[in-house]
Image 1: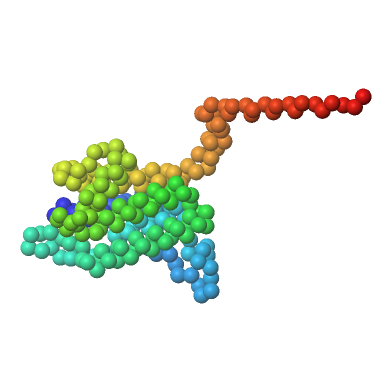
Image 2: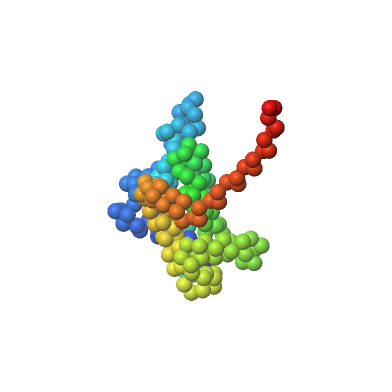
Length: 215
């Protein structure tokens, strides 16, 4: 089934990246538990943008696929997918905490949240003719178009390759977004409002008629 192949494509993305391309050597899959009585936004529980991305890259690590069946197809056990779902929920909470604490901005947060949604949809089983299938396909189409400007259909022979390319591109762009934060702020200050037309002058105040002065 093509959906099973897509799941294993994501597995491959998380497991086969060269060590040099990973942003952290030993990422934690979930936020560290807060100490008793400690505030929810304690620094020990917060993940910055790089840590959030790395946790998403390693989402499928330490999942043991089931043995091949008679058809030679490996499957991710349901317990493994349940673990991935739990990790996705935790990453969503981590991202919200980071946004509230100002560790990440709204732009990064919304792009990251969209990636979580795509991973969620990929790992959810799609039943043939299920009512939600059209919503899944629409989300995939929009994500791939917005990321790589490629038209995408589930039935296409290269649909899995396009999905992989879109996910890789989005990871790269989000990493670059984090790494160029200072440079972008400098450029914004330099550009200022020069790309917009100057604001119109304020309306001139009408002079009040002078009162007759006593002679």
